[in-house]
Image 1 (spheres, one colour):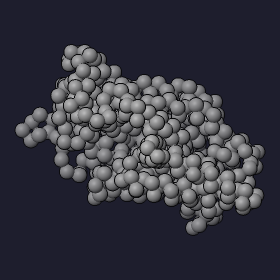
Image 2: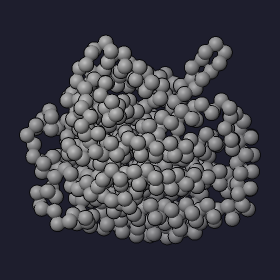
Image 3: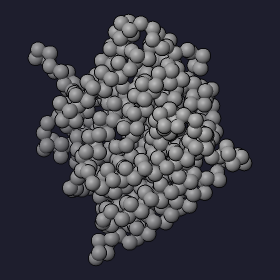
Image 4: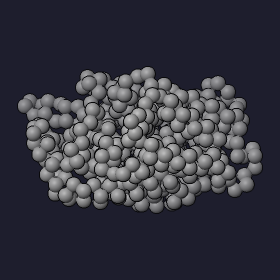
Length: 500
């Protein structure tokens, strides 16, 4: 570290890999086009879904890179550092999600592929022919995605600060580059970069879980150090869950798993697959990332054994690498995390711009828009979305982004009935689903705000207290209201199952 506070060696390595993925991002506009005619290459299928031609390996890297984000690498160890075993809820969550993917997503892919749908809201409108319900699903997707993009920026901001850089210019420059190559190459850019990002993350984590314990005296020392710290803190934290944490832990994992593939960015990866079997194979192989996530989470415990002291929990991972590794490897690790922000941020902005174009602009502004016109609108909106996320974190407190992302999880879960039920049964009508969605959104938001934007809500029955994930509570209310409304309102508009 120089007198100026900048770690020049780490910065040089960081810049090298950033330039590498930037070149790949721009080159991706030529990748896997298959000599597509100019008109076809300019449409939304090509720009927003990569031509719907991604095979098993590309989908594995894209969905993995999109699902396991830079903020995951920062936030999961930070949560384990702060609260202990409770922070490991991400592990069962990322195990539970894949049976859901295996069962539901191939059917959803068939519905989208046969009718040429690009977004979840397209699928909903195709089944129910209800503009209000389509609008509700699209609005929820866009609103839930924006703070998620901001969190990727926060993850990048943390590692840029760890390099010794200050000010907003480095972050702004990074996302100008991201915006430009996403505009040029669409979904192909993050799909190609995901190969590099995932390889780098695997190297960083595997080296860390071998080298760090070896330097500290072994895993016994790591766990003993963490146990001692949590014992001094007191309260229901530590290396194992307390009985009162079992139910909130389980419901948080289940609700998060149900919500994960309702987000526009994860669905974008699904719709870009070339066939339903590609999705099924990925549901089998993607749990390999969960092993990686478990190893990443252990970094939170290692920080205690290393004597790491930080101002904010998000600084734990960068501080650990700065303290225990040579500068060149710290730079490599920070580059991996930063590139891990670029992939999901790109896919998220594409998912949000697809929603805006297909489900706001086309039905309400320009119903006769051409396929090429859709792509042009989506490209411009993707720039606006990234700029909005950048403004979000530059001018609003980080906690605001965290709060909105928690709310986003509650909100996106309320789209589950409208998107999934019609794939299996034709009983539910659009009006009933819209009523359930509205009540679920309102009730979930009210509970979250009443609890100070916390992920779980506690009910008191006599002398007993039961804590559950707020999103799952709101979803249960959503489903009950949908069933009652369906009986009360009659048939309305119901889906045909011909696309399932």
